[in-house]
Length: 602
Image (tube, rainbow, N blue to C red; front, side):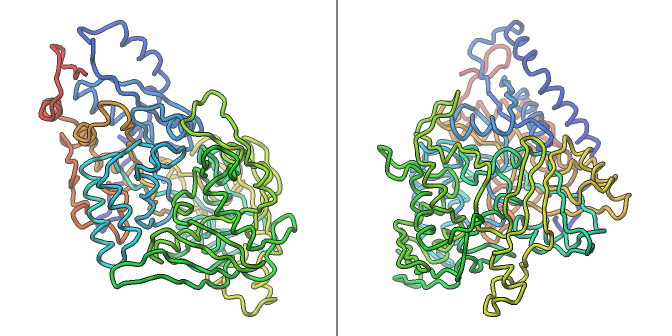
């Protein structure tokens, strides 16, 4: 949180939630009504707003209500398109069928600026997934994204500052609020929840078990995807960092703001370095001894080499052009070659990149070749037209995942639960049993203290809290509605754990179509959103307004620090209410026209 504690008032938050719920429920009626009434509406701009619906995201609908108020004040019509989370990702990330969407950025920990590379570089414009879903093309942006990969020190910081400034002016997406994720926990059987919830998924490896007789940990969520899809490279981005990511180990893990060797026991770097730049870094990675997959097969350097080749082309050369994984594109785009030298040694060759950036590629999960090499056939997705081919690997649900992580899959029922257990042949288990005194991988990360972990799918935030109170679950792992805070604070041994997320809520524009291809138009739309009001009212004070996707990191440009007002897109109103005259004048100033009914026309 900021030094001055934000208000926890949730009265308007509740009102907005109710209004948004009614808006979603009546979207079809509103659409029919607007086709039959009104004056001269011919040519009025109609904006389609795509939002996720469901209790696993209680904030998107009230954000949409706020945006709609601004659009109406500016004389712009709207069509609200509520969709399930999975359908939203299909519309936005696969079919590019949207005008504006509301969602969260795809990062769960403090990002390196290079996360913006696949998100915004024009070379990814035709790919599916979180590769430039905005269709954004800007040569200056491309150049800055390329430069920051090679540079280091103050030179890289200056380039990243310039990149953030450019994004502030062009607004391919509008960063809104960095949410504070609210979790409810019980402290009678497990503790150290602050570490566990602050940094998923590795945080679960920091839990302390208080009850020696019961090693079963139960978590509650309102997000059904982990019960239905455990594919870490799913084209629809099945995002669950607490469970799926612990099934698969990377070479290097990010924890506590640092990177540490994980499957790798050692890494030797070579690069042609200058004081300002490092280019074409190469790495020789040595794996730990006696690694194995959950099915008992050995994990070798061949699996590592396969993984990076596979992430770059999930069709394994069988298609006319490569079909890269829609996730971990940042990592795969850095590596030009991966070669197994022997069972425990792999050679990685990088494109122009500093060691600092190149090391980020090693955080991608490693996959078993004997499982994923069977998923390279070209696939189709019913009802979705893709600009690029998709492979089975991208649409497969991976129902019984085989990884090498400290937990392994046991069973699941779609729409109900998923259960995992400790993988006793993991190197953390050997370290905890003192079987490998030379293994220094654990540090503050230990073999799980729980023997089994179940994630139960529940219907809503109130039900999550009821289950917590009834001792049916030990903690919640999907964001709680701020309205539930008082119920938890008043009932020990229940308590709250809050952590600011780096996955900021944002408006995403489809710049492929007009007028969303116009940066002046996008910037003016951004000015219809009072980010401070959103943080205080929609998020109940559990969030911070932001003007950059790098807010909260050491990379945030000084000029984009939030000082009470938006430094690049100041709000066209006061106290959350848009000034109609100022809004219309702002659009007129950039060349847009209004008809006799004060409707913006195109």
